[in-house]
Each structure stands twice: as C-alpha cells, then as structure tokens.
Amino acid sequence: MPRSGIRGLDTVAWGDHLCLFYKSTAELRQLLTHYFQTGLADGECCVWITSPSLTEGDALEALQLSMPQIRGYLGTGQLEILPYTQWYVDNGKFRSDAILASWLTKLHNATRRGFAGLRVAGDASWLSSREQRHEFIAYEQKVTDAVSAQRILALCTYPSAGWIPEEMLQVMQCHGSVLLPSSGGWKAIDIGRS
Amino acid sequence: MEAHVADFIHRGIQAGDTVITIATKERREGFGHYLRTAYPDVEGRIDVLSCYSALDADEVLSTFLVDARPDRSRFFATMDDVFSKPAREGRTIRVFGEMVTRLWQEGQPEAAIALEEFWNELAHRYTFSLLCAYPLSLFSEDNTQRFLETCAAHSRLSFPLHRASV
Image 1 (cartoon, rainbow over the protein chains, first blue to last red):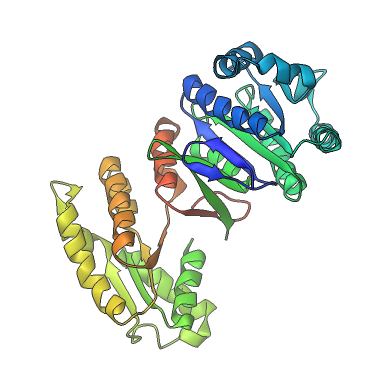
Image 2 (image 1 turned 90 degrees about the vertical axis):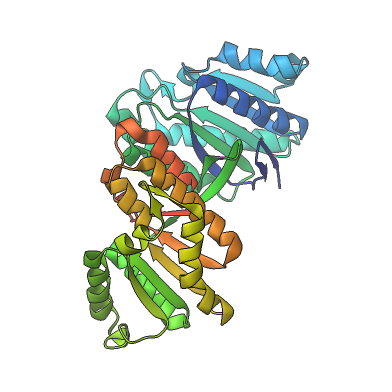
C-alpha cells in the first residue's frame, strides 16, 4: 500500500479517489508538498494539476524548498506540474471523457516506465460557476469508477470557501472517501449510500 | 431519513441487539410507524421488546446540560445509566441519537460539537454504533466549517442516493 504523505493517514490504497476541503492556501501547499514528496521518494510518477489558488510556480517553489533536487524529477518526467488550463480545459471546454482517457494514458506510460504507480492531485478552485461545478462533480464520479481498480492514487482538493454544504455533500458522494481535519492531521472517512 | 433510521433499528432488532433511540417524540412516532409499515415482522413487538428503548432527546439532554452546554461528568453519568446494563450482559448496542441535532436546531453549534466529542469519548468506554442524522438545512454557506467539523466527528458518512440531505 502506498504511503499517503498526509499527516494522520499513514497509508492509502491504489485506486483511492480522495477529496478534501481546505481552509487556506498555506494548508493546501503544506499538504500537497508532503503528498508529492512521499510519492516521488517512493518511486511513483506524480502529476500535480494546479489552479489559481496555488499556481504552477507556487507548487514548484514549495517542493523545491524541501526537495532541492526537484528539477531532476521534472527532467526525468517522474513529476509533472501542470496548470488547470493545460489539463482540465481544452479551448475553453471541459471534456470529462478526454481528461479521463488522459489519466489512463498517464498511468499506462508510468507503468511502462517502471514507476510504482501514478499519484495525482487536482485542485478545483478554478471552477467559478454552478454549472461548471455540477459538470465537474459528474466527472469526479467517472474518475471514481475508472480508477478504483488501477494503480492510481487521486486526491482532489476543494477550497471550503464559496462551496455550500449541499455541494460539499455532492463532492463527497462522488468520491470513495473524504479527508477531514482530525487532531492536527487528517483522517479518511468512507462514504456510504443509503 | 426515517427509512434509513428505521432500517438501522430493524437490523438491530433482527440481530437481537440492544437498540436505543434518543429522539424527539415526533421522530420516535415516525420511526414506529415506519417500522410497522415496512417491517411487518416487528408489528406489535417493538413497544414491548426489552431490547428496544425509545428515549426523549430533550429529556435526556436536560440531565446533562448546564448553562446550555453539555457537562462532561453529567453526560457520562446519564449514559452509564443507559449503557451499563446491556454492556454488562454483553449485548451489541446500537443507538440513534438526535440530541446533537437538537442543539444545532437551538442555535448552539459549540454545544453540539462538544456533545459529538463526548459521544466519541463514550465509545472508549462502551462498544456501540451510533447513527446521527442531520437535516442539511442546519448548515448554511456561512457555516461550512461547522459542517465539515460535524462530518469529521463521525467515522462514516451516508447520504441518500441522488439527494444529499442527511
């Protein structure tokens, strides 16, 4: 089982599709830095999709502070840091099936190159309208179904500000687990359906 | 929501567990009605079953609230009265609790979160499963952190299909 790199949560499982709501950019930066550091150290291929709340430059700077050799990982392709505009949006359109296929291609390439698996994180702070959010939530459900049997670990991060509880529930529902703050760290809570 | 809770109660009764509901009168009557309708096998039995206790949420709350805040030692004294007998008998205990919801409804979020923590502490003393249910209307855009804290106080979250309201 892969180590999570998330305080309070020692291990996770391949196929996990996790979500969390963060309070601040500082919290997000710290969490994702440890998450990706762990994946890189453990020989996983890592893809960090950034958004306006924590940009590509911010992400690289945060990783570089704790891993001076970070550019080496970028050079070998073990790490990619991409802005959401290069991943989620194509000519101004959000095409969920194409994105999903791209994730599976990334996994295929990572496996072929001998990496232990694919560790990814995507941030949702770029979603501005209610329609965009609904479309993204539908995509998240597809991701849950598609990755559950794959050597992919996916963490989706959402800013808690601006989301109403009903939308938060919808986000939680379409993931297998939600990470919630607990004793200075995080704990994973399974989502069931009645 | 009543269907979900009624199913929780019914499964407990079927398994021979001790089932305790701590809910409003209206809600308890709703569960009873739903159980009798959906599960005819419990008809006529639910009120006389020694393993089923239906307690009033406000009455139980009044035993341990001090200045509108749950008092830890009073809470444990009350719960010891409720849990000790079935625990001594080695019975599996399942509880549906609505006291936290009542505190939310009365505009006491800090008290509600404190009570959640007491319940979690009680789980170190007794083995039981606790089901809580919250109307989504308790939480607004202004208190999403409270909503997340409430979620975090539980070990599992469950939502009705196609509708997020619990």
